[in-house]
Image 1 (tube, rainbow, N blue to C red):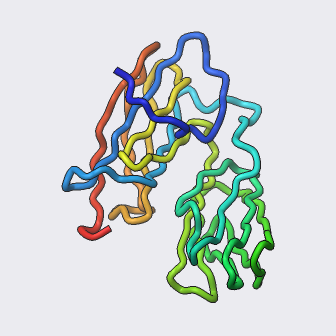
Image 2 (cartoon, one colour):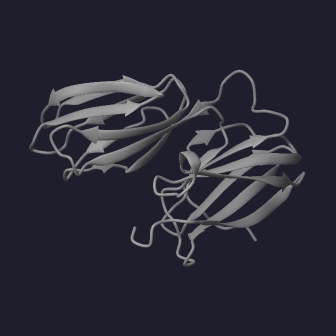
Length: 203
């Protein structure tokens, strides 16, 4: 039985007439669900050529002295908007290799933007508020999703064969905060997996 996961897929892609899907449940070492884990899938046959479509106008808001959402998935080439909904000014920056940039001070109801051209993990901070942190996962596959509060993610439209599945989480104790596995994908129907991540005891 498919796990119902509303609005998890960030990207829209025309699925082949016969295609399988992957249902994941991500938990920590205590069996608790892990939200905000990013799942990316690379089928053995490669990703579709010619680019892929995605939800237009990705946004990461500064609200209540926090980045909202805490984790955002975007494709390579996406321009992300950073609206400030706080009464105070923010100064957004990243020292991450895929995108080193800074957006200097901007105030309430002002918006700035940045275009992400390289795949990878971009960690964000605010020079004014040290407690603020956020992450943008820039991906080069249309098969990507983020887990919900129940730790669930579903990806469809996958061709028959093996696929490399990567699970990323900012607190994962592993190289590049990633855990990889190879999963067989059926010609049709769904394959379900539970993935355990080793995370700090207090999250």
